[in-house]
Image 1: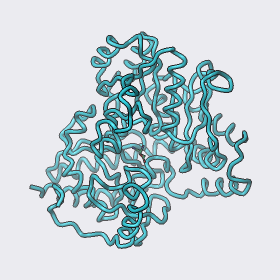
Image 2 (image 1 turned 180 degrees about the vertical axis):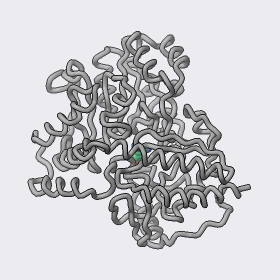
Image 3 (image 1 turned 45 degrees about the horizontal axis):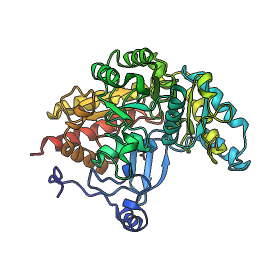
Image 4 (image 1 turned 90 degrees about the horizontal axis):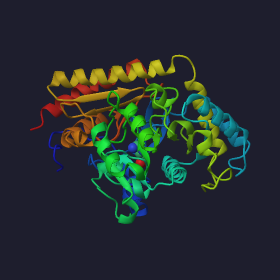
Length: 442
Ligand code: HOZ
């Protein structure tokens, strides 16, 4: 029995998912293609998904769930939105990959450059990890410096130098530093607590003229959801400028999710380089890194910084991303998203309080999170103090009632434009029952 699971829960019928998991575990580590999907932290069986429509998912046993994961962020329009499906059918009919330039890349690049103040030019890649690795290489080349600074609990994909004290699955599984990453590779990575400008000043005092870049999730989304405190992003910009380091916003999660134009538009702080992923591929694998023209022109073939990819700018991904951004550009989209997330987190806060459970919630655009913690939660240390046993009981009680949340307290939640007010209301009713279960824990 796992701690916190000693209160009765109605078992979900997961017969087929359990059988598939047994088979999958023989064929793939943990039975999954990415560790965050394994339900390790919540000691459960991941439902094997067969289809998604709008805000809902259906698993192999026919269970239906209201989805707040959205494929970990890309599905801001919900599952299988007709505009994206149409664009995909059109693109697929013309061929799936050419390894040659296409008009779709130009259209999507123009849309992104028009939306993000920090991007004049960009390079498409296939994943957020790849975008970050490439941006760091460019930052090091452009500054002639080697060190980089990241924040504790920040997750920027699985590149060697960034797996230190990382959030997301690394935090969920409690892996402080991954085996297989030579110490020499991480010696150049400096860390500081998120939302703490005085600690940052200390790091700059020590390493200032060696730092090529500071990389940050402008709204932290991989240690739960933690918004930047007042002045934090502005302070980052200022200290980077003072020391000649580049500022990299990892907007893989926040790009087109917290606002049209991402966190840099929402908070009016312009980074030197930006990494994007998730939403810009509309549910297909696409990512990008971009910045000022003068910087980006150092990338091959314009410049000497080498980076390449067979499936980069894939026409299906470009078509899905473009259709998604065109839908998001419509007036009122972000207002609606913001309203839904606020209704959800305010409601969660109220239901938790009514059950006598301490909860600290945050929402920014279509990103949200909650901690079983009295709050405030400003950084990774605070996030780690939240009660994992309470999270487990809450998560399982919600899943039993058909609400699909990320199976870890170190992940954010995602609201989509397919979530209706009635979905949020139904979620809150279920959350009320789940909080009562949490309150009954010894
Ligand atoms: N970046 C995603 C949210 N933490 C996780 C995706 C994954 O690792 O599979």
